[in-house]
Image 1 (tube, rainbow, N blue to C red):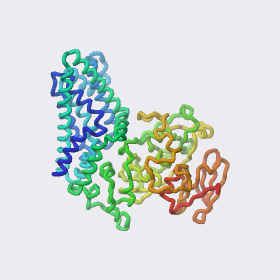
Image 2 (cartoon, one colour):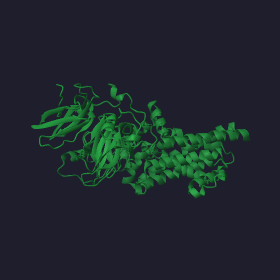
Image 3 (cartoon, one colour):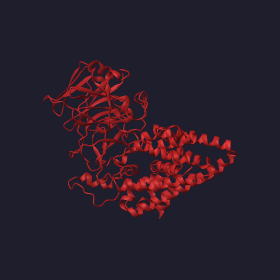
Image 4 (cartoon, rainbow, N blue to C red):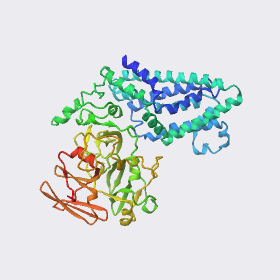
Length: 568
């Protein structure tokens, strides 16, 4: 019963969450612009409440929504709200667009006609469109679907009902007082029409903010200024009552006594005692956290949630000659049969992962701007399945934590190591690539193809959101240790020989230079020519490598790794 009351409280607090505050004008605005339809906001609220329940059950009881990308809900919700604003401003707009039927926009027409005729149809659709948006704002809601609902459907549904009741009551209060407030200002028809148009503009602005992602920036701005107390309050309450929730362990992880473990893997056997961060459990309800590294409690939330930084799954490429960015832009270069594919940092910094196929090999091109790690992996999992990777929203020692979409195993980007889940203990295979500047690519491979900035996402690819970070001595997320032998953010070439990690200062390798070192009794040759680096063993085999800031490599390998600096 305690958690049911918490669920009701969470529903009430949701309207104060940073991600919901920008949407409240929809409910308030619906409250007083049509004085003869005082039930309008309550119809929206009721439809929204039903939408939350239906959306949740579809997520948990079927795979119907699994293949629908998050961007769909963004465009759907934002689009319906924009349409509401347009119809509010111009009620007769449909009379002037005779080709609407030809474009098969029947659903939008229903919304528009509903509002034009002052019927409840449009209100129901608007409420339904807001359901998926409101569903992701409460830690308690996410905790219910991640732990309680899978373990006990009846109890989970009971708690979900409590959440929806709290949400509906809070929104109804907003609507009621919104009617009172706007009713005082709408003293005559002309003023009522003016108020209606003001809210029409607000609807359009809110809808465009959702579509463009500006609402997430507003959420971040609010969080940075401390308007996230409700979320933190829920977090603390969840931790306190989790022991009494059916299906949830004391650390918030899903209880599953039937989960299999490798009998010979003692590390996996001990992982059941790992204190799994609650935000990971909520974001990855299907991940097997009984198989996890002891480092998992050190994993932090980076701010954006799961897929909050969207990976690119369908990359589009354009000729190098049409890519108008400065020669100084750094890029990852992959050989693709007889040609080359180029992945610029100015795009990668916004997406961090590009799932692609190069030379017939499924690859994940990855980049973590917080630790400068550029690495390309084979997307083939240890069991032979080919998957795609997404951004988890989590960080370990300031390094990106990825997840594979096939099993939702969590992977550390800089090591390729599975941190938790079905493939715990495995490592991803490295793919050979080059780190160059756009100018070097233009000189060497003028026919190369470049990842287009037409990604389907609204991002300012001419702007670096981490501008100045690599030149600063400070960290957004400080590592647990800092090795002062080199400046923390110097870029190093990293590779492994046998069981020995090796790091080489990138600035120490000059074009035309040949460098030799010994690792585990083997002669290792490094050669740099025309911006390209080759590392070979004494048998002539190429050694795959990647790039990473010094602090990140040192905190992971400093105790066992070898540093080779040709300058000393």
